[in-house]
Length: 493
Ligand code: ADP
Image (cartoon, rainbow, N blue to C red):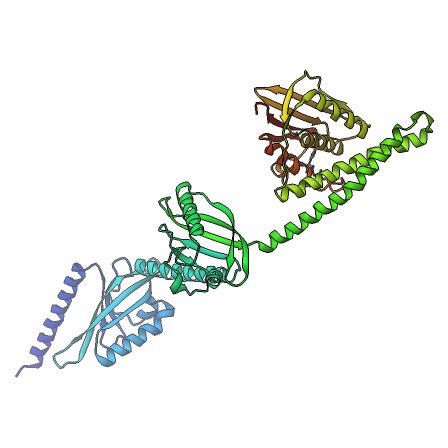
């Protein structure tokens, strides 16, 4: 039988051995190491590894010192469970670090039993998992964000009437939105991973898109096109489409995304509008031509017998009908342009005569500006005189419209390096720099000209006529000082 003294000696020895083991463990591991009393009320010791503050004396109030307030209940519950079942305590939880910030640990503690099988104390180790937790947290948030974005994109893509799709580089579809699936009358499973042909496109159509995919891939640039083909339900439709490269991080094209819009109605409306403009202009032109002819006849008929007032009225009437004719010609040209029916009838003509006629008309129409026309030698150029005269008249008309009465308008013409260049310079309002690129667009009107009548088609028609001749048209201008509109035409044709 052992004496009490021997018992004490033995347990002292055991404790010393335990302490030694604890110290060895502390030295061997980089983890935080701790010892808790059997009921976890007291922390006997904790080596915090600079991560947590050390505890060298038994400490009763350890929970508020070490555990983040929001995780305290969780920690207590895990302790209760480990104690109840005398099993390993294991928990990831937030802690208050030695530097006052919040960190994360994975903490494990094992019960140490005495010879009667009762828990004497708990040995614990905790590793710093703050970085892992942060990374996990970030990943979770990124995932949530990605999923949310995916939901947003899917909602957009599936609720637009436009067709949206993505081709892989093997020309097979890797994405198609609801509108496209409906148009095909197919489900996702039946359509994705399939080629254009397999999705019912005619061979010419599939071939065309495949070449366009090649083009986008080679140039890394978007392309736009128009195509008409039959819709499963709606019949023949016109579509406007854009193919855009999807570029990966390495800068390579990894797929080609496309959107297609049904523009049948827009096209039909435009056509109706053009037909209307064309028809009205045409109908107006016939009586106007007769009117002009009658007026000219009257003007020429016995001018000496006319009283000064009648003479003036006749002069003005001829002038106004001429203006109206120019305007109607503009509309007719627009309508012809839009329906692709504007033809250039090129023929050689004498530049000198051409400009003389323009000068005559200009002097007749505009009496309140000073005009300077060029002195030029006889030279033959080729082009559609009627249409070119419209261009020059238009530029002169604009110069008059956008400059003060009494100011000078200079017309110049040069032929150099197989190129004819005609310019019209005014001392008018000029054009703000930011408007210049849009000036030749259809229906574009300057922002500051609300009080000046116009339709914004003159320069558009001019550009189309000049480009149809193989020439160029542009403007140089200083706001407040004046503008020079110039065009060139190749003369060697
Ligand atoms: P419109 O004169 O009917 O508006 P245009 O197509 O002839 O249409 O001209 C487009 C725009 O270009 C005009 O609205 C005007 O702002 C600008 N513009 C054209 N010519 C001149 C000019 N000589 N000086 C200043 N601005 C001009």
